[in-house]
Amino acid sequence: MAAGAVTLGEEPNVFIQQQAFRLEQCQKVIAFAEGEGRNAVFLAKRNHEVTAIDYAESGLQKTKKLAQKHGVDVHTQKIDLLEDDVPNEEYDAAIMVFGHFHKDDQIMILNKMKNAIKPNGIMMLEVFSEEQLKYGTGGPPELEMLYEPKEMLAWCEGHEVIHFFYGEQERVAGKEHTGLSHVIQLVLRK
Image (cartoon, rainbow, N blue to C red; front, side, top):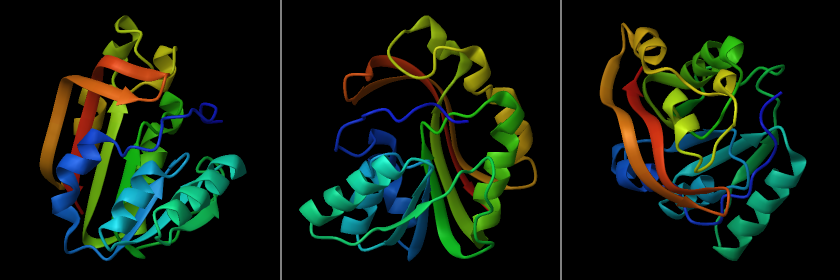
């Protein structure tokens, strides 16, 4: 089971804003563990056809409301990434922001993201690293739900890594995620 729904506000993630230019050739985008839709709506406003998936119906309802507020369409699908399959090679890009899963499931989730995109598709994510525990500025309070950079890099082998970052970033995303944080960022081409 993924961590409970956390309110991250309506502003899109800074990393997604900074890297969105890489998605210009991507029409169909799937947002994994999208929560309340802030990144999906941001990308829809940039003329992408976005599908937001999450296991929490409440988050998907908020995504629909946020999309309406901004005058855009976002497809929503209730999918439990631990149990359900995602469409294969249907999207041009897949994103995930702070989608935290138990260590035993992290590679499976990354594989589902990779499988969801077409050949040459873009995969983009930002997650908290294990170092985040020392910061106390958000994210799961247990090591087993955080990511380890060497494991992620090993998983990337054989793919074109466009961007990889491991270190400190200032994050303001609602009450639960504010201040200096320790993250892993990845942009990969399939």
